[in-house]
Image 1 (cartoon, rainbow, N blue to C red):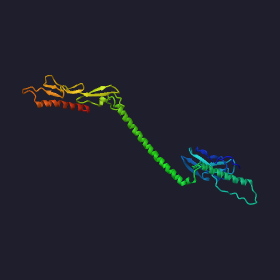
Image 2 (image 1 turned 90 degrees about the horizontal axis):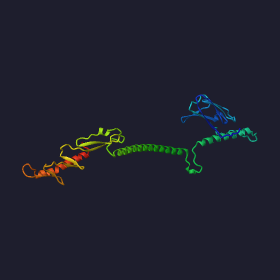
Image 3 (image 1 turned 90 degrees about the vertical axis):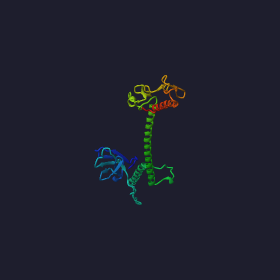
Image 4 (image 1 turned 120 degrees about the vertical axis):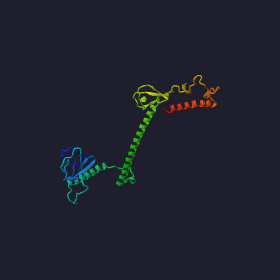
Amino acid sequence: MTLSTPISKTSFTGNGATTVFPVPFPFMREDDIKVLLRQDGAETPLLSGTHFNVTGAGSPSGGSLMLFEPPATGTTLVLYRAPAIVQEVDYVENAAFPAETHEAALDLLTMICQALDEKIGRAVLYPVSTPQEDIRDSSAFLGTCENARDAAQAAGIQASAAATEAETQAALAGNYAAQAKASVGGLRVSAGDTTPRNLSAKLAAGDGLAETLLFPGADEALRLSLALAENSGLELSDGLLRAKIAPGGGLFRTGPGLAADLGSGPDQLSTNAMLSLTLRPAMVAGRVINHALLGGM
């Protein structure tokens, strides 16, 4: 026969019903045909006489495969030719030289070459120009591949962890940016606060502070200012907290503080009292201002 095609392997998709499949390439013996089932990446070899029968050995057009059970839906049936690498033709000196016998031997050699070519086509090969000393045996090569795989997997895990950490940091940075943005232009509970009067509901001004709602609505803000009790003896003038002096009260304001009109008689103030009056209002005013600035109520 002639071999006009290099094909030595074919496959079919199982449907749970079909049991007969064509073998579209010639083969010399039934044992030359190997069969396996592939499912989810796993291969299961099938045995001749146990799982299937083959007919058509020696036919130029190929043959037929009959399975005892149909391949399940989703599986792949693979047929391939793998003849034994043998040479069984014996030429006797001065005997006849039959053409068919000689051609059959050549056909078998060609089939062996095609089977090897198909196998080599699935192998990982070094470039042709690779020096011999750089070519490693299969065990060393597979060890190198496994080490590279493990390193790649470890790097992938580290990259995934780094990406997760980066996402976390980016989210935190976004929150910080939103908080910073929200803090500009007034006091806010959060950057996404859209509830009207949310601030005034959560913040309360105590004694000594007054609360003023600015921009009522979603973009509200609060202004906290100093609130003086009636007859407190203090006044807020031009942004300054000062002692409030009643006319004719025996005290008058000077550059450094307060001075007392000592006068004379038992009802007038002493020098020590003047010094106390000069210092005490400034101290009280300082405590009130610090209390307001620190958010005390």
